[in-house]
Image (tube, rainbow, N blue to C red; front, side):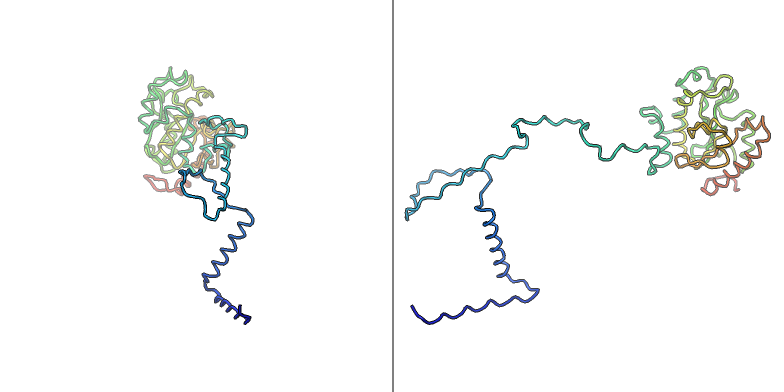
Length: 323
């Protein structure tokens, strides 16, 4: 052996900053694998056991024993086994045990993402035949053949409504009277004639507005509607509104205003302002029949309908005559 000192190893040139060095990457990978082996020990294959055919090969020539076979990994429990070894019950289609992540669904009538007409139609009870109807003619035919409450049995004619099927203004009263029961058309008696004059004063023709009542049959002796009669008939009005899609609604009379708004308020507290009826401006004023009995109510009615006309024009409502 030579005693001459060995030449020192040449230093590895440093990589230029910002430049990839393959040799340095390999050294880091080897160091990482060595550290991993030190921490976790010998790597074991956890997949399915391999089967080998018997080998006729002789043992190693140096006589060293073959390494002991690794023990087979314990079978992991299948997804259907539990800690006790019993299979869990079969899943069902029921959602009773699913947590309520979003709370109760909002009432469609209060959902501002829906149109006013969708909100109003959602007030019709689920499963009602009106949901399947797509025209006023269908409603008229169905109403003529249907008895919802006892007053429907004694009527001469059902009174659905009259006017354009796409009117921008809808007028809603309480119930038909004797003249309406005979003709099947709302507001045709003295009260109807006064209504025509009111409309003319604010530059509306009768044939450009849609006129209807909450009740479609005349109550005996023109008595006030019963709660069960309103409950049975008002879904028809909801469907009429949903189909006609008016820009505004004028309710004439305390019963009509309270019936639509779901209140029991005085007319004095209802009139003189606009109510938000599921996104549609609604005004309440005196019924023309009340004006025939009380002349002093004509002035407040005139103030109400002037406001109505101004708002109607602001909303772009159609009219034969300009205000």
